[in-house]
Image (cartoon, rainbow, N blue to C red; front, side, top):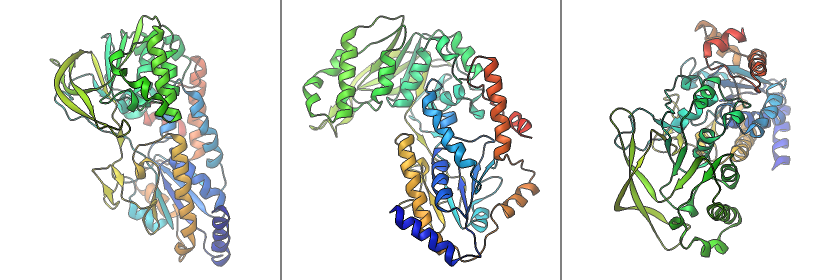
Length: 458
C-alpha cells in the first residue's frame, strides 16, 4: 500500500509539473494533524493548509484530555513538527461555515478534508435535565480544561454528592478530577478558575451510574486503576452487581478479563478513605428532581436480557429508587454538527455522510466527524492516516486546473476583517501561557478568552 501511494504521488507530480496540489484540512485536532502529517510527507510539493476556528491548535488534546494526564498530551510535539513543515500552514481563528464556507474551499483547493470533530453533547432527554447544576460532561471538561465557551460555566460544588451518568473514560476522568487532592491538581494545567472552585469543593462522594453491568462497563483498566489508587479515596462496589461474574471470567477476552479482575480485587480490598467513588450498575436515570437546582435523581432499576453477556441489553423493571445529589453530570457521548448546509450530514447519527472517508469528488472526512465519537487518539490516528492515503491515491484525478489555495481565501478573510492566526502567532500565545503557568508552579495557564488570545498573537 505504501509503495503504491508513493508511486502514485511521483506519477502525479511528474505528469502535472505546472500544477501544484492545494489541499486544506478543516480542524486542527488530532484527526486533522495526523492527516496533515501524512499529506505533508507524501505530497512534498503540495501546500497543506489547516483551518481552525479557534486561535489555538490541538483540539481535543488541549481541551479534552484530563489535566492530570500530561503524558497523553505529548503528541503535540509530533503535531508541532508537522505544523513547522515548509508545505504546511496553520490558519487559526477562521470559522468555516461563518467566515468562509465550503463552496469557497472547494473553489480554492483541489482537495478538502473535514476533520473538525464532535463537540456537541448528547442528551438524556428526561424531565429535569434543564435544572441548575445538571451539566454535560463536555461542558464540565471544557470548564476545567480552558475551552473559551465553557469558561463561565456555573459549577456548584457545595453538595457532598455528585452523580455522573455514563461509565466511559470521560466519566471516570471527571470523577477522578472531582476526588483528587488539590495539591496534585495544582501542578497540572487545569485552569485557575476550576482549581479555585475545586479547592473549596465539598464533594465527598461521586457515583458513576450505568445502565448495564460490570461486564459492559466502558471505562478501561488504566482509568479504573488510577481511581482505585487515588489518595484518601475508597472505591465502593455493590457485591450483588457481581453475582455470577467470577464464573464468566475465563470466557472473557484479555482486556475485559483484566478489567473485571481489577473490579473484583478492588471490591475485596475495602480500602479506607474520607472520599468515595461508587460505581452503580443496572440503573437508568428517569428524572432529575429539585426546586431550582438538582437535588435528587429518580433511577429505574434494570435487568439484563439475553443469554450471551456480550450482546445483553438492559431493560427497565418496575422497580425505582432515588439518589440524592447536588450535581449531576451526563456523560453519554458527543456528536458532530454540520457547519455548512452544503455538507451531506446525517443528523440522527451526528456524522458526515461518507463512504470509506470519501464524501464526494475532492471532499473527504475523517475522525469523529466521520465515525462518531469512538476509540482513543490511536484510533483517530489510524483513521486519519487512511483518509489521507485515499486523498493521495486520488490526487492525480483532481489536478486538472490550478487552484488559488489560501490566496483567494485570504483575500475574503481580509475583506471580512478576520484576524488570521498563523503558527508564529500561536507560538506567542504558547509562550505566554507557559510563562504564566511557571509563575503559578504549573506547566501552563491557558488563556480562556479568545480576544485575549488575539491580542497576544498580534
